[in-house]
Length: 283
Length: 257
Image (cartoon, rainbow over all chains, first blue to last red; front, side):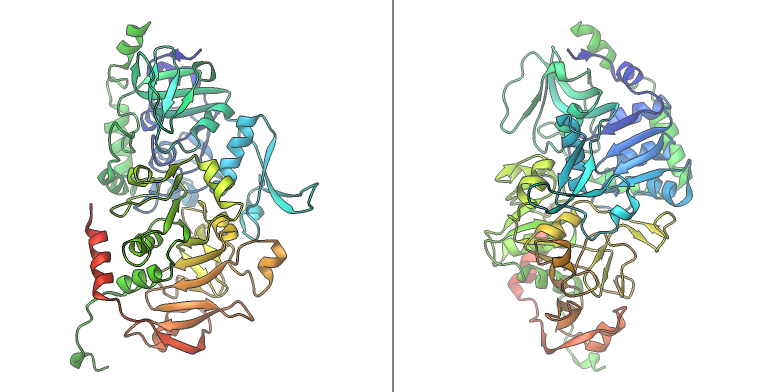
């Protein structure tokens, strides 16, 4: 059964130095608050896994939490580059960042294999590209039935997966809808999982196209309203497009980024914003 | 130049590019759309001659009908207006991989003579790149598995190069027949649309050849913005200027919030 915890306690218990951590959410429901709590708890040497390491990983990388990044597209969607990511790759600042680079199809299939308890996935992918030359986790195999040459990629099984969802019930069953990305696969592939949610409700009413993760498949749930900001939570709040533009000016320079860290992450007095009380109330 | 005596152009090179790219899409086609220039063109086609164009975005939407340009690949409007919203593994495994999609519509940071696409690094040293770009996203498999690929890119000597620094998405390799040798099922890039003109692969060599000039552009100008010894099609034609209706639709689309 999932435990309902404060964000601070959940990150403290679930995320350890050196872990492989996947924060997923494909443009929607990105667990930003959880990412910043990892920074606040000064985790180090993480292997960060994510298909689209956008702002959430730019922040973790710039803060020096990551040793390695496993990914398929690293940009500021609709705006341009991730300057902290680029600074780490091009100048090893603040620490060197090893990269393991895939395509979206490859990453999605790695999560599917992880969720399925299989060692690898096959796909029709990567043929002719320069990715296999630089990424050891792309190999080619021959189909034993047809002889077709196919790509093989190993399962991703993170130590911990973190996602954001619209809501959970008091037993820790989780419900998300809209663009659901690869979150279900990430949670099922991971040894431990944390789901931050907009709200905790008495009963989960069905939503068209919704995904339910039963409580027994999740380790911890934390209530974090607006925990996906500046991304969005369908039916709760819209994507904060100006913030993505604004991030470009924060992330561009080391100084402006350091100021942001001090003011917006390390100086936050009560990172749970009432979440602790909420967790106590439902016990 | 006799510019002083000619009427002022009523459209920009970027507008011409978007209109030319939109025109390439046929009604009813199923189109896998990259964000940015391709998304603008695909949505323009929906507003002009191809209202039933099926737009598929890699965030997991089939048949999106946004009333404005999406700000990102995962803009909520894509899901709200879609026929179906599906998971990311499903987009790639069930819809793209089996060859259900007609046109893959991609952008590029670098594009070469054989329409190979680079969106990974500038500079030949992958470990120490001059510029680190976002990377592959969905493009490698879109380029491999769609029946055809159209590329929209602003043209300059920096973007139109003899050979890309990194093959992120495979075009025609180093020439005719290379795709078949790799077992790729789609035809690859069959059309490249820029702000200067339109290029198609030569049927015998697969090298990109200039086949259309946009209004007001001359061949020398295109050569000056091409990083290889550009060949020009013997049937070189002129792109018709955007119509009033096309420009109006494009401007309304870009202004809509």
